[in-house]
Image (cartoon, rainbow, N blue to C red; front, side, top):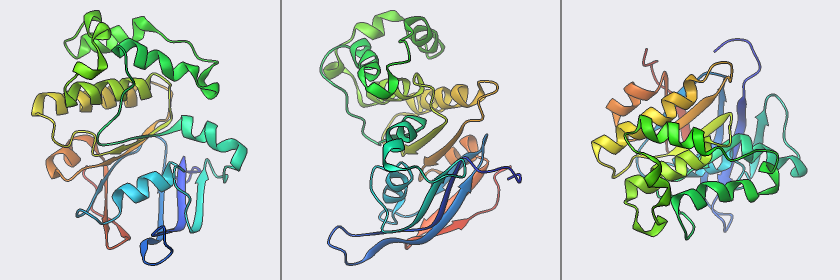
Length: 230
């Protein structure tokens, strides 16, 4: 990383169980700069989801500080923060209705009302995945797991976030759909002049080598930086 202020920084963050007993994370620190592609690995139950949800400010930390561009967001700033740092779950949920309805609903949120839904942009991205505008008319309930994940990712990236926190977005998906998800994220990262970044949780070392330039390992609530991928 350069000496520039990181996009996202965690300083000594910790999370306990809801009952206030054991620590799920303790004294975890990291910094992610613009343009960085980070893979997060570790055994099941090591706290990867807890960490991403904490970074997304979906769950409050019990100790430590999370900084965005060098500042700690206040309570009134969290909605804007979450519009810039978007967390995508392993099993995305869609609303009833068509694919296009799900994409358009994002713009009903107050934080996104200054943006305009672009059907042309969505169709262009679908075409790169070998789909056309007929996909937009499909009922969300009829979609496969992979198709649901594609819609959830399109729903997120259309909002022009600066960082994605991807919690095993391709787990249980076939190889073809996995590569399409990777392609969507790669195209989003490659858009010039945006300074975007992501953290991608994966158990697949081959995927980590494909998508990331840094790999972090979380084990027993502690974070370790592994050798750079390239």
